Structure formats: C-alpha cells, structure tokens
Image 1 (tube, helix red, strand yellow):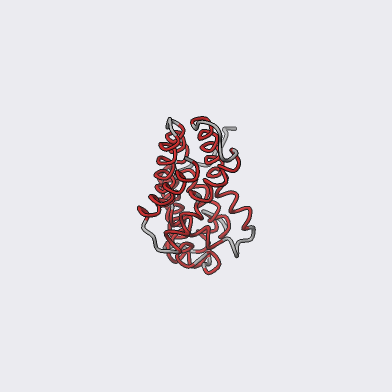
Image 2 (image 1 turned 90 degrees about the vertical axis):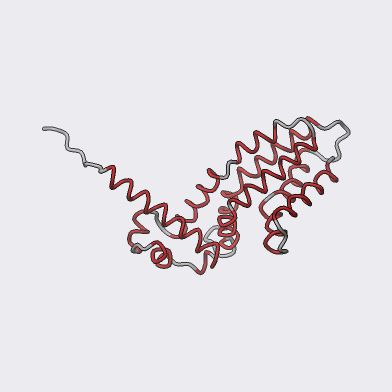
Length: 204
C-alpha cells in the first residue's frame, strides 16, 4: 500500500507565516504601548484582524507570544556582527566609541521590544527568567568587550574584567539607555555622546 502523506500547500504555509508575523508585530506594539498585563489575546487578535482561535493555533498563549518576540529580537539585534566590529578595534578609545555606537543602534532599533519586556517584568508569570532570556547574549557580549579592553589597555588596570563588564552593563545595557532616553527625555545622540565620554573617563 502506498505511503499516504498529508499534502502541504506552499501557498497555505506562506499565508500562515505571514499571519504569524502580523500577530507578533501587533502584539509587540500593544505590549510596548499598554504593557503586557493590560493586553489580552483577544486584543491581539482584534489588532491583527484574526480570531483568538487563530492566535492560539498559530502562535500560542500570550506568554508564548512574548517569548517569540524576545527570541526574534535577539536574532535581529545584529549583536554578533556589532561585537565582532568592537573586538576588532585596537585601542580602548576606539573600542568604547564603537560600543557606544553599536549598543545605541541595537537599543534604538529594538526599542518597542525593550519597552514590551520592561513593562512585562512586574506582571509576567516568570519575570526573572524572561529578563535573563532577553539579556543573556547582551551581557555575554559586554563581557567579551571587557576582556578585550584589558587586552588593548596598558597596565595597571583600574578594574577587573568582571568589574569592567558590570560597568559596561551599567552604561550600555538596556536599562542605562532607557533611563536617559525614556525616563529623562534625552535624545539618542546626546545619550550616546555622554555614555561614551563617561566610559572613557572611567576606563580610559
């Protein structure tokens, strides 16, 4: 008896992928604007022009949706390429300038995602795990930069690699950028300039 396999329509698969992308985009916007706790699956479905059943079938629960948004943001952040560029810099000043520019670009381009995550943390089912999921690669990249700074900086070194990594996280992590740009209304340009100068003064 011939093996009967379900036929998968390429057009149907393409339409399903487009629907999933639309759902995620609308959810990201709603989470960033209203906050995760104030958005329901029905809200997301209405914004995407589909049924709640379609949302659950295609993407999952509200927590699943946020997880997908975070995973997508990590991939699209371009952090690997940005870190490779920073690690190619031969002097501390050049490293910190490239780091300020690169982290600014990542935070600015992923602004809505970062807002969605920030507003979700107090009410998410597992906020700590969400934060670690969203920032693990970011923190790891800054640790690599801290180690590189030690390699290109003449001794004596003011801080250990771990301390330098912590300071880079303070200045160039998502919370540092958000504090200046969102909470205090700074422009991205001004924030980049000041964070760069602060890091050079402290580490240079």
